[in-house]
Length: 341
Image (cartoon, rainbow, N blue to C red; front, side, top):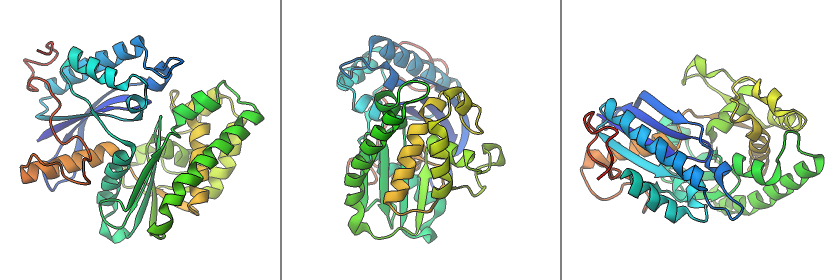
């Protein structure tokens, strides 16, 4: 069957269509996304502005039409920290449903961490042993560890690369003082979060997921995306330490010219590097693997599990994940793009 996953993130809004069936790996069919940074559409009170909401609603209508045109049979629609932590997040969700007919499921930080670990576990298999997964988004940073598919510990902190850049590292070349203050803040936040993992034991495998980790691995020498998903990619703390110092002295334009770094991600790369390096240091990780699957794939896999058992009861950790259709008319070409009832 063809399944759509509508991901309203902090840096981009993204619809991914995949073909799969229960027990099979999801194969990407088509993708539609827009570089809409909701974090950049926050006012002084931390509310998503009217312009940001209009952009979001426009994209959701586009995405639904795209899914219908390509005959998607099922749809998951979710949002993460950008809406979750906005002052008017609940109002935005209601506004989206009124205007589009789509009900966005709001994931908590621990739910994000748990669903990402599902994807990582399925990618590496049971032979990987205990896995520690780290995921840097635009608004938050998720961490999870587990020797099974469900995490033993899963947590989230507001250390997303976009959020940190806006709040602590504005401008093209942040001052040395700004970098020091941001580093002190990151360390203080992570020391508290990492302490929650004290009883979880040492991981057999540490994994980085998300575009930020992929970009950091690429600039430190990992294979390009064109080499395919099955190439082994690593990120070493020693290399990352050197590049974090370089990024602090590098204008945004120069960062955008680095391999694997997009123009929209370039301003956030320093903040992402600082979080990644500090987390690796506190977890005592010298090298991590980079996994091509992350949150979207975790949700897709759990959705197919759910369909396999034909149950209305969510699968996975209690309350984890939007395992039901988004509310909207059937995804058929005739209805694609039609106003919601």
